[in-house]
Amino acid sequence: MIITQDLSVRFHHNEVLSKVNFRAEPGKLVSIAGPNGSGKTTLLRALSREIDYLGEINFDGDNLTGLSEKRLAKRRAILSQTTELAFPFTVLEVVQMADQYPQSERASHALHRVGLQGFESRFYQELSGGEKQRVQLARVLVQVWQPVLNGKANWLFLDEPISSLDIGHQIEVMQIAREYANAGGGVICVMHDLNLAAMFSDSIALFEKGHLLIQDSPETVLTDETLSRAYQWPVRVNRIPNEPIPFVLPQTANSD
Amino acid sequence: MHTSGDRSARAKFVIFLLMLTLCLVTLFSLTIGTSDISLTSALWAAIEGEPIRLKEQAILFDIRAPRTVMGLLVGASLAVSGAIMQGLFRNPLADPGLIGVSSGAGLGAVSAIVMGGLLPATLLNIVGGFLVPIAAFIGGWGCLLILYKIATRQGRTSVAVMLLAGLALSAFAAALSGLLIYFSNDSQLRTLTFWNLGSIAGAHWGTLKIAGPLMLIALLYAPLLATGLNRLALGEAAAMHLGVSVQRLKRASFLLVGVSVGAAVAVSGAIGFIGIIVPHLLRLVIGPDNRYLLPAVALLGAITLLLADILSRTLIAPAELPLGIVMAIMGGPFFLYLLLRNRSLLDL
Image (tube, rainbow over all chains, first blue to last red; front, side, top):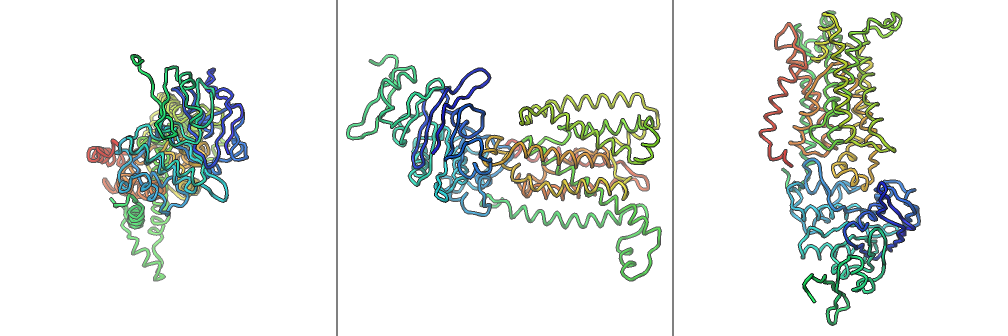
């Protein structure tokens, strides 16, 4: 369980995250949504202990500040929005960097899992944006290979994992995240696509200007009123007949 | 390239070849020189119990052996330090000069040569002939410490600040050196010029006993940084996510480079190029994985410096060319050749 208590983050004099009480449970996929600059990535970076924060973050019963980097690295892996690689490493070498057991087959399995089998000997820098994103996902999967280890859940923090992917790969990546949660691991995922968030998440945390507006099931969070308020734009939530999942459509200026 | 994307088998083979080559070059370095004694004859003489002549023994064990060992260590240290700096700055063109060690050591050496005579006689008696190397070592360290202090805020060292401050500090140290040179007399000027050209001709067991262990310890410690440096290629944040204590890695790298380059420059003067060209060449052959790159770089660095030193004492024998010149004459065109041949890889 990851719980934040009155979590605030300040950059210089701007408060980019204010008194956020967020929670994520093992076995669940939590999506973080909200407009640009609402604090989604900042929350993820605070949870990753990349930036200083006020308040408290509890990581599976421990105060996050008390955990060593080595210990944290065994418990959670982070996929950032972009990762720039120095030096011409091959795809396999990049994925293997996350492996604690250098000779294991995990890297190959992970590449297979993200649909990049046969890419092992390609240079990372030669790949397309979407392919790079999937290589990084494979690396992240290798780092916390077992969703549950010694009775404790491991965690995936994914920052916009599908931002540069086509529809097919978007679904494939979300399915990987879903399976990780189904197997007992915890997944926290920053999402822009509310429809995919609705399809795959157990709960959605909606942010607006550094505040956590609401965190609940997709059906509860995705309403016309809440979304229009968060995004400052008229948004309409529809339902596919016979399907419980809502789908979201922004209204264009000349509609209705 | 290996089809699986795993270049470790090839890297191990290359390291094995480099080891063999280094053995050969070492033997070669022991046998080549103005005096005509071959190692084999000396060895045979020793094995058969025949006392080899004192003069030959002296040349072999008191001149060539320390010079060869010094060449090995200086070459390996400069090359490994270059590779570590490149990993740390995430840039294939980084070298120890960036963190002020070289220019600081230069300033230390110049100060000792020009103003050494002003020191109290008792102090001069203690340090004896080691004044210039000691001053160079202290100068290199002083520069590095100042830079580290400038670039570190709240326990975090910014490599970007270090890079920029390093440029400023290097220019300042060069200016101070220039000022000292301006006030030096003719004989000091000659000493200075030769120091700047770089050489290991003056190596003897005395200097080796002090500088050797420093370089050796640093070289043996270097492989421990390999995994951290690899992960740093993904950026500081991603390396941290993977469990690397980035600040500790930086500190260990600076310490290692400070010790090994400080010692190397102190005993050999300014020898350039080896720290950039050797790692660059090997990255093209075995890839950038530091677990294999660092040992390979150490071996090829030692080989390169020994070869350059052999050339420096044979090309115009019985006189000697300064090692730094030979290195730059060999290194410059070769580096250009590599650049032109491997353009596509460099863009990666």
